[in-house]
Picture 1 (cartoon, rainbow, N blue to C red):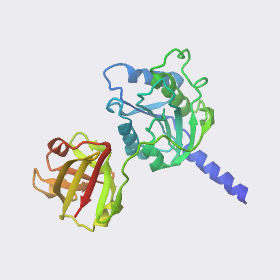
Picture 2 (tube, rainbow, N blue to C red):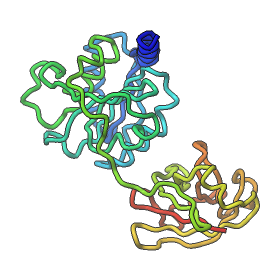
Picture 3 (spheres, one colour):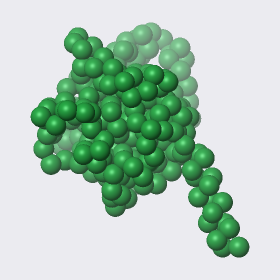
Picture 4 (cartoon, rainbow, N blue to C red):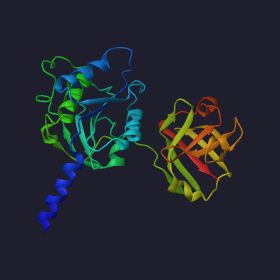
Length: 295
C-alpha cells in the first residue's frame, strides 16, 4: 500500500507540473532594442508551437528584488506547467548558478540563482531545483558569448522545457532545495504594532504596497473609517510619519485624502484618492524599505 501511495502521489505531481507549451518572459532589457525579440526568436527556433507571453521587460536595470516581486505577483495566475524566464542578471558570466526551479504548484522558473527566486520559493514552495547543464542546454555555437545568457542559455533551455523537447530531469544536475534569498522584513504583529516591508509600488498611480496581509493586520483590531498611525523607513532613516484613514476603496474619502487600504493582492497599502502617495511623500520601495502601523 505504501508503494502504491508513493506512486500515486508521484503521478499526481507529474501531471500537475507537466509542461504546457506556455513560456512567459521577464527582463530588465526594455523594448528599445532587439534583446527581447532575440530571446523569442531562439525559443521559436526550438518549437513553433510554443505560446509566448511577456510578464514585463520594464524591471529597473539590475533590480533583482523587483524581478522577484513581479514573479510572485504574477505566477499564481498562470496554469501549472507554465515556464517562466526571468533575466535580471547583473552577474552574467560570473560564477552565479543558472537554474530551473520547479515549485510545488507545478510552475517552472528559469533564471540566475541570484535572489530572483526569493519570493516564489516562499510562496509556491520548492519541489526541486536543477542547475542548467550548459553543455547540452545552450544555443548552438554560442560558447564564445559571455554576456547574453538570457538568449543563449535561459530562453533556449526554457523553450526546450516548455515544448517537452527535454524533461525536467534533462535540465541538469539536481541541487539542494534552497535558493539564494534577499533578506527583508516579514509581516508581523507584536506589542500593538504591525510591521512589514514595502516590496513594490503600484507604479502607475504611486500607491505604496506592503507585504502586510489581512491576518497580520487584524491584530490591530481596527475597522474601516478608523485612523491609523503610519511610519515609513528607508533602512534606519524615517522618511514619512502620518495618519491615514482605513478604507475599503479610494472613493470612500474626499479627493486628495490619504488612505490605507488592501490592494488586489490583499496586502495593506497606502494611497491618496486621485493622488500619488509615493511622489508626494518621497516613499519608495525595495527590501530595505520598512513600515510600522499602529492605531
